[in-house]
Length: 269
Image (tube, rainbow, N blue to C red; front, top):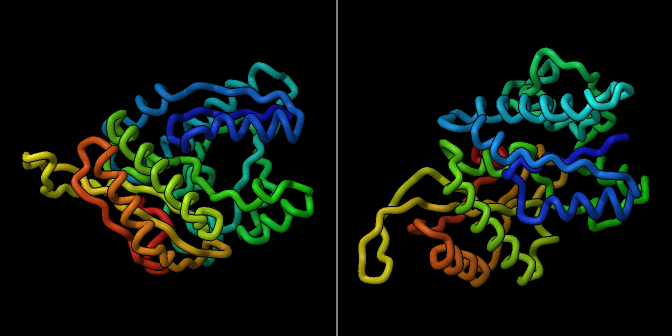
């Protein structure tokens, strides 16, 4: 097995350290880290459509994996953590409708040199976690919040720029820190920040500014197929909002998404 972590620049802060811990400390396997941040930003330049984003990201991941595999003549398979909800939303089953092309399903290029190996493809998220426990993985790994392959690219409505990526990453880190401080991070299924693409008027100092609105999304779920928005205490929301508008540049206000799934999907894009 050749474990490969692609640093796309779209992941959460310190993801590289977390992945290194899993593979080098727990699995005892040499991890290959590919810094592809510039490559992903260039690939996403000028792209505003969410479906295009997902397919571009899916193609880039596979291209990089195949480049690594080409250096090892025995490399035959590409192992993916695809689960059943990814397949359903990407119209990968007979009775499913197309909701969004997950990068690891509908976002894959048609021509691939590697054969797909997806041992979890037929399982829902709660079943995957049970399999993880049976495999002896630590609870901190089993119950970590999910994070999509496209990462912050689908937490940014519209074009992914270096500036907006830095904004959403900072806002998201604030959400994580405040939820952990309140003892809520492990209790919700997932929480994150969204650059909405909407703009509003605000007052910074004594000046009028017209800047982007950031949304906070947090929900409770078991299998990802359905979800309820998290009932976060007002004081925690207030702390998140205050920090974001004061720390993240060019942000006018913070709103909280109180939409369940269905009708909403987990992410805005």
